[in-house]
Length: 233
Image (cartoon, rainbow, N blue to C red; front, side, top):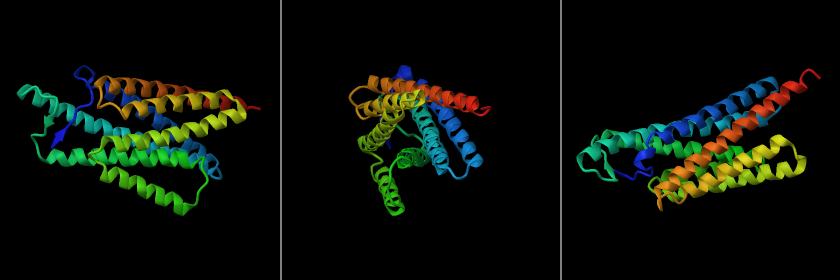
Protein backbone atom coordinates (compact mmCIF):
# COMPACT_ATOMS: atom_id res chain seq x y z
CA UNK A 1 0.00 0.00 0.00
CA UNK A 2 1.29 3.46 -0.91
CA UNK A 3 1.07 6.27 1.62
CA UNK A 4 1.51 9.95 0.87
CA UNK A 5 3.77 11.83 3.28
CA UNK A 6 2.28 15.25 3.98
CA UNK A 7 5.04 16.55 6.23
CA UNK A 8 8.45 17.80 5.00
CA UNK A 9 11.35 15.68 6.26
CA UNK A 10 12.64 18.40 8.62
CA UNK A 11 9.23 18.48 10.36
CA UNK A 12 9.09 14.73 11.08
CA UNK A 13 8.38 14.19 14.76
CA UNK A 14 7.65 17.85 15.48
CA UNK A 15 4.03 17.41 14.41
CA UNK A 16 3.81 14.41 16.74
CA UNK A 17 4.91 16.63 19.64
CA UNK A 18 2.31 19.24 18.69
CA UNK A 19 -0.41 16.60 18.58
CA UNK A 20 0.80 15.21 21.94
CA UNK A 21 0.38 18.68 23.48
CA UNK A 22 -3.11 18.75 21.98
CA UNK A 23 -3.92 15.39 23.57
CA UNK A 24 -2.87 16.64 27.02
CA UNK A 25 -4.91 19.84 26.72
CA UNK A 26 -8.02 18.11 25.39
CA UNK A 27 -7.79 15.33 27.98
CA UNK A 28 -7.48 17.85 30.83
CA UNK A 29 -10.55 19.72 29.64
CA UNK A 30 -12.45 16.45 29.31
CA UNK A 31 -11.30 15.29 32.77
CA UNK A 32 -12.39 18.45 34.59
CA UNK A 33 -15.66 18.60 32.62
CA UNK A 34 -16.40 15.09 33.84
CA UNK A 35 -15.45 16.15 37.36
CA UNK A 36 -17.90 19.06 37.23
CA UNK A 37 -20.61 16.73 35.93
CA UNK A 38 -20.12 14.36 38.88
CA UNK A 39 -20.50 17.32 41.25
CA UNK A 40 -23.66 18.48 39.48
CA UNK A 41 -25.23 15.57 37.51
CA UNK A 42 -28.16 17.76 36.49
CA UNK A 43 -25.93 19.65 34.06
CA UNK A 44 -25.62 17.20 31.16
CA UNK A 45 -23.61 19.78 29.22
CA UNK A 46 -20.49 18.91 31.22
CA UNK A 47 -20.92 15.22 30.42
CA UNK A 48 -21.16 15.92 26.68
CA UNK A 49 -18.19 18.27 26.89
CA UNK A 50 -16.17 15.52 28.56
CA UNK A 51 -17.18 12.91 25.98
CA UNK A 52 -16.45 15.33 23.12
CA UNK A 53 -12.95 16.24 24.28
CA UNK A 54 -12.12 12.65 25.22
CA UNK A 55 -13.05 11.45 21.71
CA UNK A 56 -11.05 14.22 20.03
CA UNK A 57 -8.01 13.55 22.25
CA UNK A 58 -8.21 9.84 21.39
CA UNK A 59 -8.39 10.71 17.70
CA UNK A 60 -5.10 12.58 18.04
CA UNK A 61 -3.59 9.58 19.80
CA UNK A 62 -4.44 7.37 16.81
CA UNK A 63 -3.09 10.06 14.48
CA UNK A 64 0.24 10.03 16.34
CA UNK A 65 0.49 6.25 16.17
CA UNK A 66 -0.34 6.24 12.45
CA UNK A 67 2.08 9.05 11.57
CA UNK A 68 4.85 7.48 13.62
CA UNK A 69 4.48 4.27 11.61
CA UNK A 70 4.48 6.19 8.32
CA UNK A 71 7.63 8.14 9.23
CA UNK A 72 9.36 4.91 10.22
CA UNK A 73 8.45 3.34 6.87
CA UNK A 74 9.58 6.44 4.99
CA UNK A 75 12.98 6.30 6.67
CA UNK A 76 13.34 2.68 5.56
CA UNK A 77 12.27 3.53 2.02
CA UNK A 78 14.58 6.55 1.81
CA UNK A 79 17.51 4.32 2.61
CA UNK A 80 16.47 2.12 -0.30
CA UNK A 81 15.30 4.55 -2.96
CA UNK A 82 14.93 8.04 -1.45
CA UNK A 83 11.31 8.37 -2.63
CA UNK A 84 8.59 10.69 -1.31
CA UNK A 85 6.10 7.81 -1.38
CA UNK A 86 6.68 4.87 0.92
CA UNK A 87 5.79 1.26 0.25
CA UNK A 88 5.05 -0.74 3.33
CA UNK A 89 7.49 -3.63 3.42
CA UNK A 90 5.61 -5.42 6.18
CA UNK A 91 2.16 -6.27 4.88
CA UNK A 92 0.42 -6.76 8.21
CA UNK A 93 1.12 -3.12 9.18
CA UNK A 94 -1.22 -2.10 6.34
CA UNK A 95 -4.07 -3.24 8.58
CA UNK A 96 -2.70 -1.25 11.51
CA UNK A 97 -2.45 1.83 9.29
CA UNK A 98 -6.03 1.41 8.09
CA UNK A 99 -7.39 0.87 11.63
CA UNK A 100 -5.42 3.82 13.02
CA UNK A 101 -6.53 6.20 10.28
CA UNK A 102 -10.13 5.05 10.52
CA UNK A 103 -10.20 5.40 14.32
CA UNK A 104 -8.64 8.86 14.05
CA UNK A 105 -11.27 10.05 11.57
CA UNK A 106 -14.32 8.49 13.25
CA UNK A 107 -13.38 9.79 16.71
CA UNK A 108 -12.53 13.24 15.38
CA UNK A 109 -15.78 13.65 13.46
CA UNK A 110 -17.96 12.22 16.25
CA UNK A 111 -16.14 14.31 18.87
CA UNK A 112 -16.62 17.52 16.90
CA UNK A 113 -20.24 16.66 16.20
CA UNK A 114 -20.89 15.93 19.90
CA UNK A 115 -19.36 19.30 20.77
CA UNK A 116 -21.52 21.04 18.17
CA UNK A 117 -24.63 19.18 19.38
CA UNK A 118 -24.30 20.73 22.84
CA UNK A 119 -25.28 24.09 21.39
CA UNK A 120 -27.79 22.88 18.79
CA UNK A 121 -31.37 21.77 19.18
CA UNK A 122 -32.32 18.54 17.44
CA UNK A 123 -34.05 15.27 18.24
CA UNK A 124 -32.25 12.10 19.29
CA UNK A 125 -33.15 10.43 16.00
CA UNK A 126 -31.59 13.30 14.05
CA UNK A 127 -28.47 13.13 16.22
CA UNK A 128 -28.06 9.38 15.69
CA UNK A 129 -28.63 9.71 11.96
CA UNK A 130 -26.07 12.52 11.71
CA UNK A 131 -23.56 10.42 13.66
CA UNK A 132 -24.24 7.51 11.30
CA UNK A 133 -23.56 9.71 8.26
CA UNK A 134 -20.28 10.92 9.77
CA UNK A 135 -19.14 7.34 10.34
CA UNK A 136 -20.03 6.56 6.72
CA UNK A 137 -17.96 9.55 5.60
CA UNK A 138 -14.97 8.28 7.61
CA UNK A 139 -15.27 4.66 6.45
CA UNK A 140 -15.96 5.12 2.76
CA UNK A 141 -13.61 8.04 2.13
CA UNK A 142 -10.56 6.40 3.67
CA UNK A 143 -8.44 7.18 0.62
CA UNK A 144 -9.98 10.63 0.11
CA UNK A 145 -8.16 13.07 2.35
CA UNK A 146 -10.18 16.09 1.23
CA UNK A 147 -13.62 14.83 2.26
CA UNK A 148 -12.54 14.14 5.83
CA UNK A 149 -10.88 17.52 6.32
CA UNK A 150 -13.63 19.46 4.58
CA UNK A 151 -16.16 17.77 6.89
CA UNK A 152 -13.97 18.52 9.94
CA UNK A 153 -13.59 22.13 8.82
CA UNK A 154 -17.36 22.57 8.48
CA UNK A 155 -17.98 21.13 11.96
CA UNK A 156 -15.28 23.29 13.61
CA UNK A 157 -16.58 26.36 11.77
CA UNK A 158 -20.12 25.71 13.04
CA UNK A 159 -18.77 25.31 16.58
CA UNK A 160 -16.85 28.58 16.22
CA UNK A 161 -19.99 30.39 15.09
CA UNK A 162 -21.82 29.12 18.17
CA UNK A 163 -19.06 30.45 20.45
CA UNK A 164 -19.04 33.79 18.60
CA UNK A 165 -22.79 34.07 19.16
CA UNK A 166 -22.26 33.21 22.82
CA UNK A 167 -19.64 35.95 23.14
CA UNK A 168 -21.95 38.51 21.56
CA UNK A 169 -24.56 37.70 24.19
CA UNK A 170 -22.51 37.94 27.41
CA UNK A 171 -19.30 39.75 26.30
CA UNK A 172 -17.25 37.92 28.94
CA UNK A 173 -13.49 37.46 28.67
CA UNK A 174 -13.64 33.61 28.74
CA UNK A 175 -16.29 33.64 26.01
CA UNK A 176 -14.08 35.88 23.87
CA UNK A 177 -11.05 33.65 24.37
CA UNK A 178 -13.11 30.54 23.61
CA UNK A 179 -14.42 32.05 20.37
CA UNK A 180 -10.90 33.13 19.41
CA UNK A 181 -9.37 29.72 20.15
CA UNK A 182 -11.90 27.85 18.03
CA UNK A 183 -11.59 30.49 15.32
CA UNK A 184 -7.85 29.78 15.16
CA UNK A 185 -8.47 26.02 15.16
CA UNK A 186 -10.93 26.54 12.29
CA UNK A 187 -8.19 28.22 10.25
CA UNK A 188 -5.90 25.24 10.85
CA UNK A 189 -8.59 22.83 9.61
CA UNK A 190 -9.06 24.98 6.51
CA UNK A 191 -5.33 24.76 5.76
CA UNK A 192 -5.42 20.98 6.24
CA UNK A 193 -7.82 20.84 3.27
CA UNK A 194 -5.07 22.14 0.94
CA UNK A 195 -1.90 20.43 2.21
CA UNK A 196 -1.51 18.41 -1.00
CA UNK A 197 -0.67 21.73 -2.67
CA UNK A 198 2.35 22.29 -0.42
CA UNK A 199 3.94 20.51 2.53
CA UNK A 200 4.49 23.92 4.12
CA UNK A 201 0.73 24.25 4.49
CA UNK A 202 0.82 21.14 6.68
CA UNK A 203 3.46 22.80 8.88
CA UNK A 204 1.44 26.01 9.07
CA UNK A 205 -1.75 24.09 9.90
CA UNK A 206 -0.03 22.17 12.72
CA UNK A 207 1.49 25.33 14.24
CA UNK A 208 -1.77 27.29 14.00
CA UNK A 209 -3.61 24.35 15.56
CA UNK A 210 -1.10 24.36 18.44
CA UNK A 211 -1.74 28.09 18.99
CA UNK A 212 -5.48 27.39 19.09
CA UNK A 213 -5.00 24.59 21.62
CA UNK A 214 -2.77 26.74 23.83
CA UNK A 215 -5.35 29.53 23.78
CA UNK A 216 -7.98 26.93 24.65
CA UNK A 217 -5.84 25.89 27.64
CA UNK A 218 -5.49 29.52 28.75
CA UNK A 219 -9.27 29.87 28.53
CA UNK A 220 -9.73 26.69 30.54
CA UNK A 221 -7.33 27.90 33.27
CA UNK A 222 -9.11 31.26 33.34
CA UNK A 223 -12.48 29.57 33.87
CA UNK A 224 -11.04 27.42 36.68
CA UNK A 225 -9.60 30.47 38.44
CA UNK A 226 -12.87 32.39 38.12
CA UNK A 227 -14.72 29.39 39.53
CA UNK A 228 -12.43 29.24 42.57
CA UNK A 229 -12.86 32.96 43.21
CA UNK A 230 -16.66 32.64 43.23
CA UNK A 231 -16.74 29.69 45.68
CA UNK A 232 -15.81 31.62 48.87
CA UNK A 233 -18.50 34.19 48.14
